[in-house]
Length: 113
Ligand SMILES: Nc1ncnc2c1ncn2[C@@H]1O[C@H](COP(=O)(O)OP(=O)(O)OP(=O)(O)O)[C@@H](O)[C@H]1O
Ligand SMILES: [Mg+2]
Image (cartoon, rainbow, N blue to C red; front, top):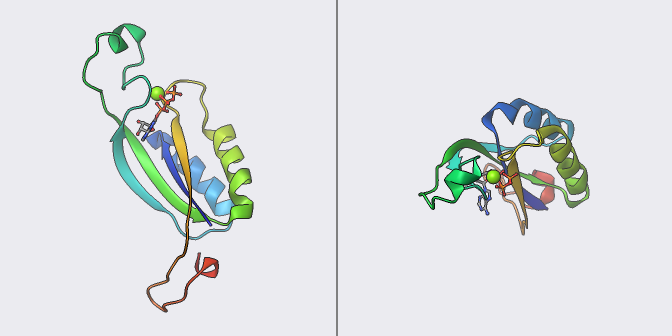
C-alpha cells in the first residue's frame, strides 16, 4: 500500500475527488493548510531575491492510501488534470504503508482500505 499526500490549490479539490472516487477508494482525509514551495510564496523573482520570510499561501492537504498497482495511474491523472502550468500547482509525496487497522472490527491489511 502507498500513502499519497497531495498538496493542491483549494479550487482543485472537486477534480481530485473525482479522480480518487473513480479509483474505488472510500477513504481520504482533507485538511486546510498553509504552505510555500520553491518560490517561497512569491510568484515574482524580484520578491524572492529580497530574502523575505516565506509568504504562506492557502492550500489543501489531501491524504489517501491506495493499492500499489493503482498508484501510477492515479499520479498520472492528478498531474494531467491538476496542472495549470503555473507555479504553485502543488506536490505529491508518496510513501510505503506497512499496515492498516479498521478500528471498528480490528481487521488489518489492505482489504480494509
Ligand atoms: N519540500 C516540500 N515539503 C513540504 N511541502 C511542500 C514542499 N514543496 C512544496 N510543498 C507544499 O506544496 C505546496 C505547493 O508547492 P509548489 O507547487 O509551489 O511547489 P514548487 O516546488 O515550488 O513547484 P512550482 O515551481 O511549480 O511552484 C506548498 O505551498 C507547500 O504546502
Ligand atoms: Mg512553487
